[in-house]
Length: 222
Image (cartoon, rainbow, N blue to C red):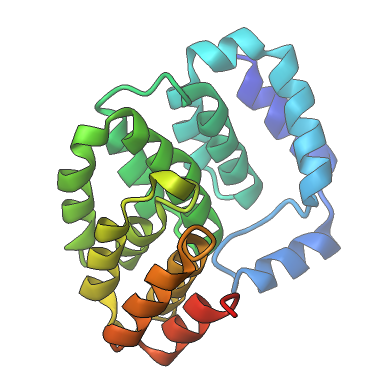
């Protein structure tokens, strides 16, 4: 396969140590970076993707998992972007195994939020009958990123949002002391408030959320 070696070569040729240091620091040194800024990374990535389009389409899952196993964060972003594009409308039922692996591997808010919204969310639209069991499984996990995903996966659903399910997940996790859980609850409710602000106001008023969750949920409601 030519795609991954070409991408590795291009990223190595465009690395910037000063940017890499700053990027790693911003991500609390959880990951190493080539130091390629987002616009430049996407430009390089898309050109190589275009040159190897058939290979990527035919091997999207395998390529994404290999990229995700590499240490540099830029490869992880590319893996996620490949799956968002190539799997939409083409998910297989057992893709949930890949999705779960991505959520719990190389975890931080930047990857998890994108996976939850654009991959897990899309998967559950295609396999809606799986939603109850998968969300229940992720919700009871001790992994906070799986928990966060159950709260955020409907961010792109708008009128399709199952507000009862969102309320259930918010209530399950509302006493969490984890910043990323409290923030997720507020974010998900704030997003749904664009559709039904009154329902969100009533829910927040009646459910004793953490102050951060409450603040975030009501931020844009007049």
